[in-house]
Image 1 (cartoon, one colour):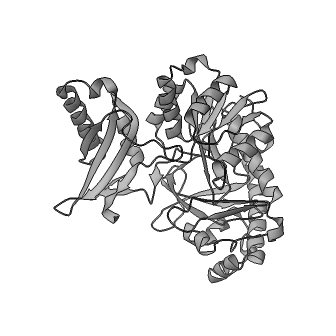
Image 2: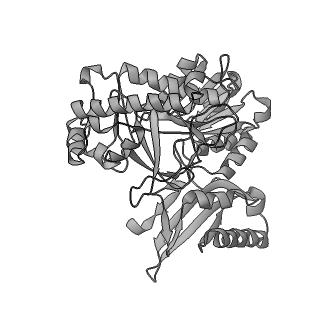
Image 3: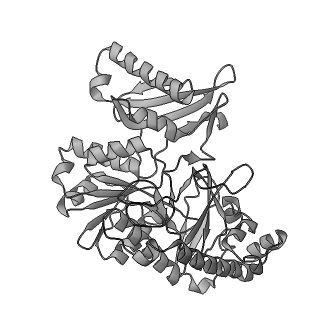
Length: 434
């Protein structure tokens, strides 16, 4: 499969590290001289731009957290003149003050470049039609794909999220070959298509780029089967640029990080210690070439590990494993640690279940944590005799107990009874904090 930017994506480690060091030094100099927040933070850590003599010196820099970005809302971390800002995006802000990402013309060029690589890794090329089902507006998803498709020179359908019937009609009428949206929404599209008698095997759709919410390997299998495509995992954060930080190639074995623009580390989330390759921990990323909103050592809260063994696609960039969870999504149920993605993996491999579920956590009458998992089941099973339902319920309970060590109440519900989302699916309802 063609590689969009061989010079950057297939560079030698020596050439890449030399580029990274030069850009890291300039990034530290930029924020030290232009951002009072960072100057104060670096001074407190006893670090100046001259302290960065090699890449390992990045460990001297203090971390940046989401709280830092919220505390400096809206332009407290701006590293350019406001007159040079040509586009602004924010996080949803549903759990507090929004995080702001400001872009200069150079930043938009960078964004288009890394998203062109993302789409290219999924096999997108001149002559293809990208159906962009991510939301436009302040959310970075829609316009991130938009900039990348423009850079790649492909046909773009900027349909945005929602309006499912129109999505399907345009997919059929315009011959979309690549779909971009959240993984949960792709399954909603498959469900709606089936109801309308639409067969994905008769469409030219060949691949999808899915992100913005956690999803498991078993959900990938479900998506690929129902949409008759190859499903690629993509990764990004508003705090860094949006989508385009890392993406899966055709090998589907880890996401390649665009290391010429983003420097990754894995740390112990408790101690902040940098961990060796292959060890699970929290992903920390430094933006190396941003002008508007550069960040140093941003703590993503995402749990993964790095892989440096050669990839058969020919790219030499480091890869991160599919996200294993988030430090702030970790559920502790009666002393057992568990991530929603682990539960999803178990559910998705059990025949008879649908890829729609919710996890409800509450405190019982004994004041101990209790977990109920609501799982949609296939119509044939739901309308079947009680024995079949009880067998399925027991199997789910026993496999979760055996594999994850959690004892959950399993509630099997009829198809389409769990609310669908055109954006990120709400998987967890934690009533303990209500």
